Length: 268
Length: 262
Image (tube, rainbow over all chains, first blue to last red; front, side, top):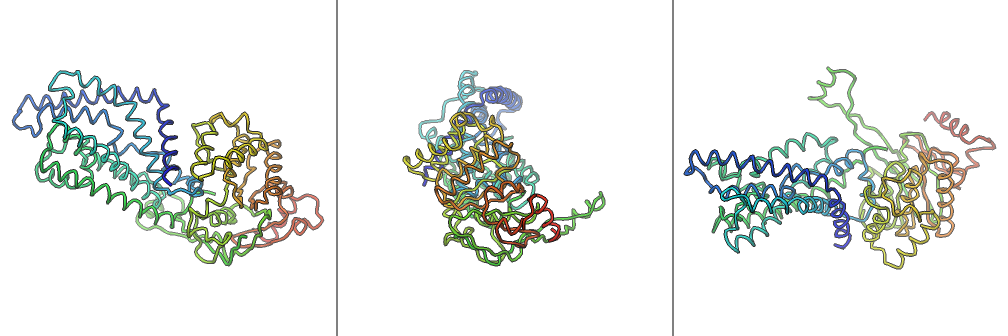
C-alpha cells in the first residue's frame, strides 16, 4: 500500500532536483537574509548583552540553521499546483485514481520540501561554519542535543507539511483559497519564530506561543541544537511536538475525508 | 453493468447582478441559486456496450460521468457500477475503471510520459507482466514509440491525447469513460483515436461511455445514443432513431435540440 506513495515521492523528489537555477538564487537570498539578521542581532547584543535571552552564538546558530533548512519550516512555501487543481477542477483526475488524496499530497509536499532543502542546505552550512564566532554556525551543545535536533527537525518538517495540508483541504470548502492562505501564513510566520526567535518575545506571550502547534515547527529543533532549550523544557517540548504532529495530521485526514464527500469539482 | 435510477444532483451557485453596488451588497448578503444539473436520470448500460452520451453544453453530461466515476455524490437516487456504489468506496471503485477528460491532463507535465506510466503502474499496483503486455499493446496500437520518452509538456495535443488514453487503460479497466476525448484534435488524430476505441471495445469488450459534441464520433463509435438536456434524459436509442433518414447528422441533432428546446 505504501509503495504507490513512495514512488510518487520519488518522482516529485527527482523533479524537484531539476531546478538548479532556482536553488542558486535561493542560496544567495538565504545568505543575504542570514547576514542581515545577524547584523541586527549583533547591534542589539553590543548595546546590552545581559538583556539577551539567548547567547549571541546560539542566536547565530538558530539563524543559520533556519536559513539552511528554510524549505523545511516555511509555511508559506505551499504548492500552487494543488490550489490550482482544486480551483480549476483538475483534481477530478486525482480523484479518479485509487489513492488517498491526503497521503498523495502529503508525499508530494514532503518531496518538494526535501528536494529544495537538499539543494540549498549544504552551501549555506559549509559557509556558515567558517563565519567567525560568535556569528557563525556553532557546534551542537552535545551529542544528545544533536540527535534530538535531527529528530525534532524531521518532526518539524512533518508538522509544517501537516499544517499546509490543513489549508489545502480547507480550500475545498471555499471557491478561492487566497484569503485563507494569506491570513494563515502570515500568522504562522510570527507564531513559529520565523521572524524573531520566540525567547525574544515578552514572557507572557512567549509562554502561550510555545504551547501552540506553530512552535513545534522550527522553534523546538533550532533551540535544541544550540542548547538554548535544555533539560525538562526540552523533554516536554519534544512530547508537545509529537502531540501536535499527531493531532494536526488526524484533523487534516478527517477533514479531507469530509471534503471528498462534499466536494464540487469545478469546471466542465 | 451500469445502472442509474432516479438520480438527481444540484449545485448551489452564488449570484449577483452587475455593478459595484451589487458587489458591495453581496459582501454581506450572498444570494444563491440552485442549479439542477441532473433531474431524475435513469438508464442501464450492459457490459461491452458503447454508448454515446450527447447534449448541449451544460446539459449534465460531465456531472453524470463524475457521478459514475465516484467523484461526485448524487443528491438522490441509486447508482450501481458492476455492483459497486461509486461514491461509497471511491478507491476500490476507481481501480476498476478508466477515465479520460479531454480538457484536462493526467500526465505529469515535467517528466517523460513513460515516467507517468511507471508511476501509474505503482498506483494501480499492476503486476510487472501485465504492465509490460499492456504497455506493448498500447504502444503499438496508439503509435507511441517516439512519444513516451518526451516530457508531456512538449507533445502536441493529438500526441498527448493518445498518451492520455494509454495512461487510462494500463490497468485494463472493464469500463472506460471518455469525456470529450476528441476535443481540439486534427482529423488524423481523431481517426486514430476513434479506431483505437473501436478496437478496444471489440477485442477487450471494454464498456465505453463517451460524451462528445462531435457527431462524427458518435456516428463512428456509438451503437446507442443517450440524449440529455437540462438535466433530463430526452431520448435513448440508436443512431437511426435520431437520424430518421436525414443525411446530415449535425443538422439533425441541432433540430433535435431545438425541438426539445434545450
